[in-house]
Length: 365
Image 1 (cartoon, rainbow, N blue to C red):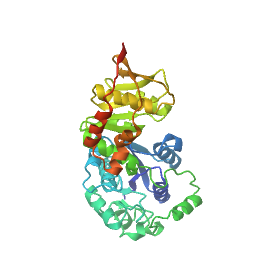
Image 2 (image 1 turned 90 degrees about the vertical axis):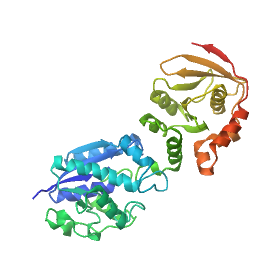
Image 3 (image 1 turned 135 degrees about the vertical axis):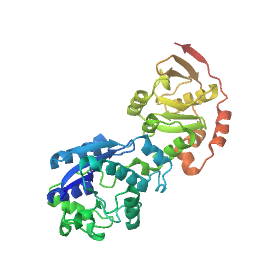
């Protein structure tokens, strides 16, 4: 009788409890943890990846970490089963992970899969019919055991075969987490980050930025995705996006992430944010970028010197005479455009009228 299983271990409470229950029944568990550019469990919160490794170490089980790559992002762009409230493709995300796990099972000699899913806890992916759909499309029908909610489902293969004792499984359901927290207390499990999930794809502002990226940048890459989590995002026209730092940490990350050939704009002789562009500029749009930087400056000057730097190339400095108008700035902000359904072409026309100002190159190097 094969008592080996693969467990999806997020680092959260539910999956931790599910794994512990199986270990207590003598199942030989290999944990699999999936990471993504959109994971919101930051190192300051211990980090889901670090937490998952910590749990695996405490439970003395092996763990494999899999990064969701560009194949995952392409699925996020056009998920067969649609998005949730943001750009979160929860159903297809689950199918994606389980298919990856299914591919691993022969190598690990695992006979079934363990998850921490609780019936009815997640609004999109944990209803009964949805769970069945995910099982079918992942190719894992009858092989997914949900220890926390097992009694709400028919017995699965590992239960029927006596690999696990169904009587020791649970019947949790719904969105309350009190039963899990009480169980964790009894098992002396104290540290469980991201109790309500940590996916940035559910964040409305990130969703707006991602939608904009999919719409305007067909050749996006992983660096573009990392930039979505930084700064303020403005689309000046269909061919040009500007990302402006919010603070010193953002500025440092923007300059660190910028690839060779990228164009950076930074204050020269005054305090203000760094900016990086995605797309192409002309004289008017460069003046607009400089004026946006000046708008967020803490300093008041009759003119502002802005440095343009090509990463790995030359620098130049140009002069801005005034700050960007606040009303037009709001219309260019991707989040405001998205939630107010503002047409970017109309915004670009307004921007062109505002930006017919004098700007002079004063230094080149």
